[in-house]
Image 1 (cartoon, helix red, strand yellow):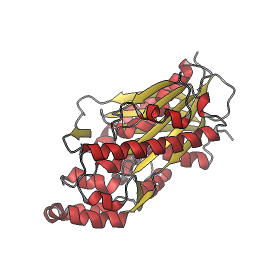
Image 2: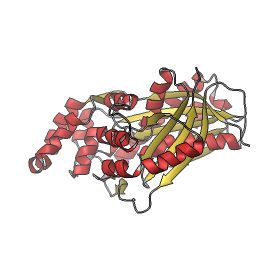
Image 3: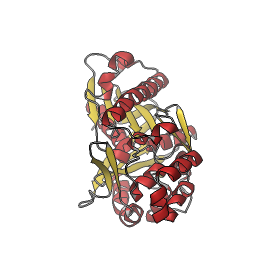
Length: 349
């Protein structure tokens, strides 16, 4: 029997530039003027998104001019590296550990391309040992936070006593395009922000903390067009189907309930990735929850927007601050189209 993985610590970080939703709406009004003329209701997305502010790797005036792949990549490398270091150092400090204590580093990111990968680029600044195992993961999108926690838990179980550091970094705003104005582009400009989260995990030691139980994924066949990136000479292009909320409402319950039964969860607290207001409403409907149940999710969405992969870990951080008790089910969905899930056990009493 594998030893149970314990979450020793969790830390989050955001870049320095705060974007007020009203300012983003004003900028979008200039950039998307033609689209708003054709589809007037599109302009309402900024007020209906449930978001007041977000954080960005670049100030708002950066987005008024076109940027090519090299510019976007340089911005990604600089900002993602800084957020990696900030979140990782904070998480390690909270666990009472140093970078040289880390045996495995898992890096999750899908909003930029780095080769060597981010953990290699910051290894000297962090102080990782030369023999640290590096596991970079690309392409998991909004599911990445749940994927990182699950993968890190499995690696910790496979290497009892070793310290696993998981760092999840996304800079969604760098994908903003002035040369595209599809409905998906407009909606994305109203939703996405930047952020990072880091986890420290260990199994096979007498550690106190949140215990990670069963983990699983479910991928629905024939759903590659729901979410992802396209790529062209300018940069990433968002792929986001308008059918997503309805898909969640109709298809989420069955795999989620199968997993809960398999994991032995009776009535777990839900920690879910807040993809947007409509997504949260669809989750509550699918799982027969009272509207407004996902309060932590809505608060993270309001104050940070959808940061893609790390967002669910921001929600988990809020739950931990409130004193997470008993069972919890952490879940996020992303390109594939895939649902990633983990069973958590907080303090009792």
